Image (cartoon, rainbow, N blue to C red; front, top):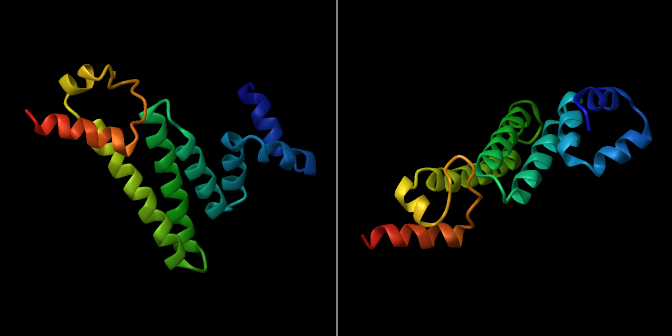
Length: 136
């Protein structure tokens, strides 16, 4: 979908548009953010990040945007304690990504990973790689 088509779609306010956006969470979070539904936008972004397996950098971006929206909700919303636990979960996911991104280049190459385009490692895969490093 072209950028100008997305912008036109997001400006419309009809039930059909809402139904369409529910099927396209990559656009939905923008609409939620524009409507200042920061908690919804943050949760949509977390769900997108959880589904992201192909690019580590994209997952980091989605999680960072989610954290930003959740922090806005924590600051402006009625129940900061509930939001704090969600922010903590996002922080934990960001920490996993940081460990992956800090792997030495030689190790990444040994596993056939390019630091610029590497896929997201599962926690089990990351542990395996870290154990491999400690053997040497």
